[in-house]
Image (cartoon, rainbow, N blue to C red; front, side, top):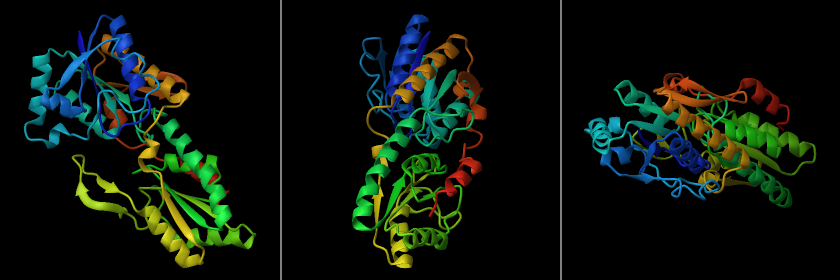
Length: 341
């Protein structure tokens, strides 16, 4: 059996660990493994290459992806879907392992419905895929954000400032919430709850009244002051209909300073959260997902995705995995509010 592996959407720490695991387990099953360049674009353009044990040696601790990635959507390219099936036929590919988040796996689900034999692996630092408790990449991103918040505390206190730390999170605020709790943030703002600027200012002033001359505000990039209105860098849409988010942190810092009179600054972590070496937890989780995905192919369980339920890796349908987003638990956010202000 010839099995192709692709990584789509945003990169994240742990992708190489999955690729390595699929190749090693796949070879044990007698598969021939091929890599696909740059996600779904590689299947459209026919860019594949041989993957072997030697090719994946030493990649476990590396960030990024040796396959490359893109936000290409075959269903948004004229003739894109037909091109995918032509590549599969010409290259003699029997099955595809698609590693990605809601967009990549959403495409996988639609291609499966059209007859492509494939399985999925959940990847996103946002941890917003339903069907699994955790996605790999999330733990690393939270660790990076937490370290940044720890470092911002000392400079904020030294200058008696409010510092707004903007982290990633388009629709779900898991990174903001977890890193904010771990880093002792004084306010945490997430996409699941509209921002109340008066309340944010009140939390900051409450600290001032207690003699605390600085505050740390953590905000997810997708948090909104007005329901349905994102802070964006431009109005252009990618092939999945997403705008490029950015600017909520700067807006908040300006508003906080205007409302409180306290000097405020913003730090945008951006792609720092995506880069670098994965944590031990993400390496282990990614490896477990990769081995399980190879087993799904062996068992011909098409249309399924590897998922973490508790401490067990199980199979869930791509339909279940992509039908809705995994959002922040309201009870966890309410717990975090105990420490606001």
